[in-house]
Image 1 (cartoon, one colour):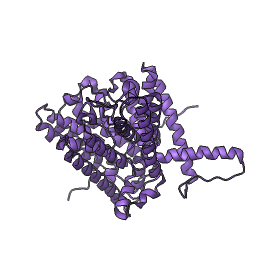
Image 2 (cartoon, one colour; image 1 turned 180 degrees about the horizontal axis):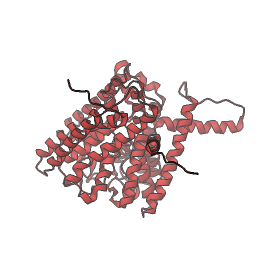
Image 3 (cartoon, one colour; image 1 turned 120 degrees about the vertical axis):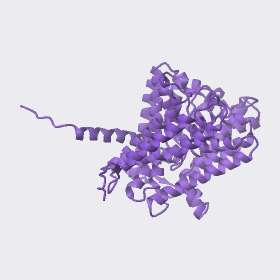
Length: 508
């Protein structure tokens, strides 16, 4: 009988290995599409990357174990290192193929991070010059990142327990993670089931619409469900010149900007759960009011007819308000290029970019829940100035918000604002115009995609220097995983390095 092979207890390495293995099916699917394509032949980089991910992932997973429990200090390390590792490995087909040269490794890494973080910013000047399979892999990176690689790992790790719930909470931004089943793995499976169902529904609707073929339908469904915004076409959704396609994407983006746990509860218990969710109601009102306001502003300024103003305002409010980032600049007519809109309209768009979607959605931004808590906290502080002895609990709907959540939300808003200001200064120092720098930093932190100024929906991020793009890539990860995860990842790494540092004898 062979002796049992010793394994190392390392939750981080174990989950990273499992996540890399999950990338293999997507890479092989993309390789098959590339093999059947007549435009390019980059199937071997995809196959080789699939083999690398499978082998490295298997070695990491088989050589480690989770241990009896996942400690809180390890949670953020697991999440952050999983995303960083997957982003690096997912960039390999780009540099091994014809999309980027080896010397352009930073561009490949930028594209990969933009994919997994569901940001949608790009450094490709001609997207359509690449093969269909490689572009499908680019779409799939966003789909993987939408629900999250760690949530996918939790779905097949039934023994994680409370640690698994903490992992899901750290990766799916928000104040809490809802249990949809007694076992955490079942909760993760149900979230992925809803996610796959929404993706398939959007794909079938797009395929039934005039214009998109089966490839187009799934390519855009993947990034709609992920609220990522990548498209295999230079003009994004504007390529189809179709109001029907835009309407389907709007509905899909609105749905995916809402809490997926809420969708599951609605499917099993009825649609009344949406009305009881204060941040969902606020999110829908935010999109509706912004659409009406921008329609009237653009129409009044003579940028287009009322119908055109309504169509393009509704699309861009939704794509930016959900942090998706699709563009609908059409060759024939329209005002999809919001860089040309008036100053007031662009301020509204910036506000939408900051807020983003709901807690538990695939959207980025600070989230409507935090925004509501932040506003109510400020109102409470103003009331305290008049009534110093008064007690004013913060409520969302009928439910009081615990003070620890209030403090966490307000602290997050302060950190978010501080990082945006610091990032704007750094990017502007590289030579970028201030509006372009500021809006692009907000876009990166909110996982939005396009910015304003020179980085609008008809441009790409080659307008920035290479150092600036690396800064923006880091901010994409910070925004997707949220600030606390990245900070605690480095804190955990520092603590581990200190713990393994050899003792030095001191002589007095």
